[in-house]
Length: 101
Image (cartoon, rainbow, N blue to C red; front, side):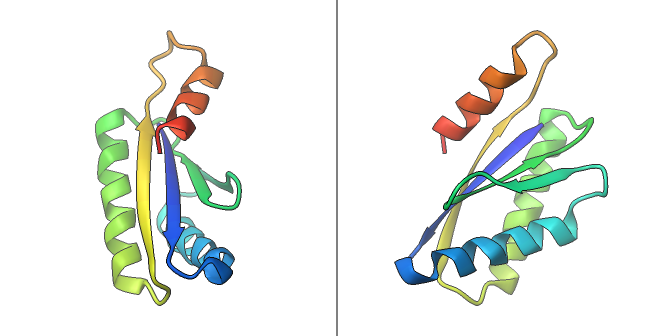
């Protein structure tokens, strides 16, 4: 399952700090088998290894709850989720989830 988190920071000068704060929460919460990376200036992506869509949705909600508890910067987080079913080209799944956030 692929999760893409997009931030909208109220103070544009603090976007990097907001993104780092989001990434820190996700990295400290996810499993050692998961991969977390920066998509661009406004995205953090998380590849949840061997995780079905429902479990990915639960993980995303958990991440968002922790972000809201630890948030020191003022920003909004939106997310999109894509699950690889084995029949779809993984590149298309990644592209689609990033377009929909």
